[in-house]
Image (cartoon, rainbow, N blue to C red; front, side, top):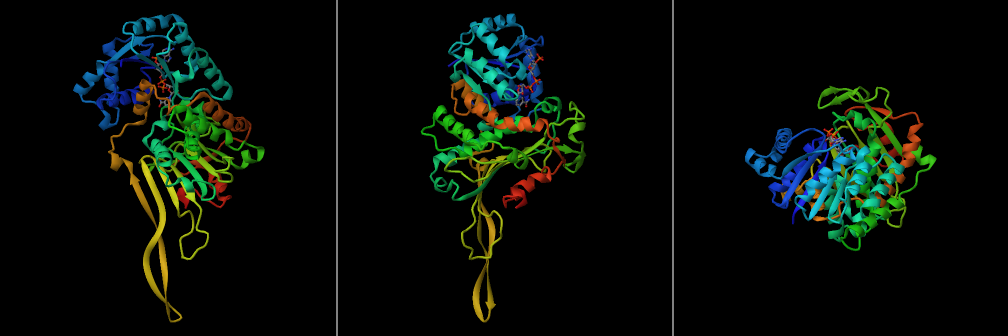
Length: 490
Ligand code: NAP
């Protein structure tokens, strides 16, 4: 099999930080088909060799284990090429057509890693240049639009010139080994299925917490915010993976049909739930890693009067027979107390207590996504057998203590597993759509977040929270009203 992978935005941040290291790892693992070309596209005037040097120099900033030795890079670099193009100029697409004709590879992947404003134009010009034939696959990065209307406009433009099976919308959370393990745990084992429902589950918490601020991406983030950057895509995809019914088979559309049903079943927002169940915040100066850090509005590229949210906490429900009445809490933000992405499935307490047991959520399944990748099953066990004498009788006053069963996938399968972007890039080259988002799923997710976007335009603005904390106190108050607490507060 031969492939050409055209990387629009080949000199950009995403290309050198994520995509090139992922392609190199696939090359190192021997999973990248040998007969391939990777063509970086941007406006700089570079030769192939200059592009290779640029990419090699950028690898010095890549995590140690993933950095190639000079010999390894030399072998990988023979696949790398560069094409100077201005994507806003229709004439420049003829150069791309000429380059692709030289080899006539069996698969052509076009990865659009440029500013979202160029997406529609790029897709239309690819078609105008006759490059949208059946062997073409197009990869679209997030964010795909900034609201429902703009998302629909992009999807409509794409749908005019490409079939849905040619379109790979990236949500890199779906490529994470832990998320694939979540599917494997739910649909490869019968163990949890009987209790995976409202009768046994009290609440579900999805947390995607970052301890970093906006770093160098302040200008981008200020136009985006946590709702669009994390909730509309990653958090809702995780919610689908937890809440969906078992698909009838493992084909992409069977999986995506079930995810779509979850999104359609999410409780619509009402004026009451918008005020009680949607909290947004913005970090102020605080402490991270023991050091004083500045507030969001002082970050480079951020408007000093910005109303952009850097934190969101939501409560929702999936209105169907399996989940009716079970709260799903979503929480994400920057400059929080730790870097921690996890899903907690909190089971209901025992119906009748015979032990003196700790209160709170004792039985829970934690799916760790970041920084470690694994499962923890929390339960109570007998810690010690204190025989006490009461009125002359000996009674067992058992002390129960929390214990946990830890499945550490890094330890079991090796820490150097296939990373998210590596998995997804290989899937695109192989034409596997399972881990990509269909247009109707994406539109449904936008439809659900749209009332939040609208109501936040005219409210009092995000609530402040100090950097290095778990967000505004309203987030804890929201969950406490249901009688629950966030994982770290239990
Ligand atoms: P970036 O660093 O600004 O890079 C943009 C790339 O596009 C550069 O190579 C730039 O090169 C090229 N480009 C811009 N205008 C062009 C034009 N008219 N013709 C040809 N090339 C053009 O952006 P990024 O951070 O890599 O992000 C790219 C996309 O990925 C965005 O949609 C972003 O939202 C998404 N994304 C990024 C990240 C991340 O971590 N960076 C994560 C998730 C999603 P020249 O300006 O030299 O032409």
